[in-house]
Image 1: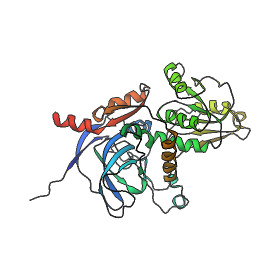
Image 2: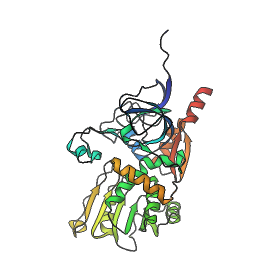
Image 3: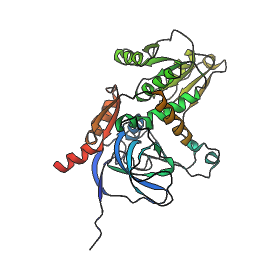
Image 4: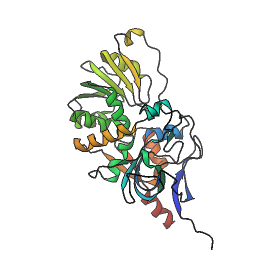
Length: 344
């Protein structure tokens, strides 16, 4: 009798500018150091939109996007330690690193020369199952539901790394108030920092939401804050915000660009940078970032605000994200997709 291989469902992207479509594939088998994960929830990130639009280099099309994965371990390959079948885990953007380049050896695996990225160069979480490298997965605090935990895996993690780069800054501006900023604002307020929120001009509901989360001021990104900032974190992929943020920070202040993709930064006078101001970027995350962030977010008591959708609606959700129609972090639930596909 021929071996009958199990199947799993995924929303696949064949190339830039195309729509995701449902596919059925043979269930993968975990190799050494890998785990097979049944997906419970997967967040929708702006990076997924950049992958859809062909703005991220070296994407391995066809690809299953999604890198804010919460799932349950169902199979374990050889040489896996620290996890067991049945564990609930998180799978982030950084899927693996080479382990031997100068960056990896210095515990800066976020800058590895030969990385793999979940949902970009290896299949991600817009699916019912995924293979993940155990070394890059995280245990998830029990107090979070599956959907609440999903945006922590990128919006939270990258925001945390950006916040770390802000150092001891007490007054911080957040440019763009989406999934990442709404998580980090709560953590920063818990830490005793003062947060100034910059939204799209005229976005009164976004400004009201920011104030509800503890921001002491919220207005359009075309406005000047009422106080000098120690640092500014730019979450929106808009290069024109960099000069604006430089003018808002004090001497010695930092402007941190938290996105993997950003439109070109326009020319600006040297006077805006002078005074030992600095522009920095955030690249991926380290495992230490993940461990520290999840411990902090557990202690802080914050709760991400999320809205869940069936996996089948991934294309519609991405378009809502593109046009700013989502207030909360969007999360896809694969169980809905599997049920719907069986009933058709």
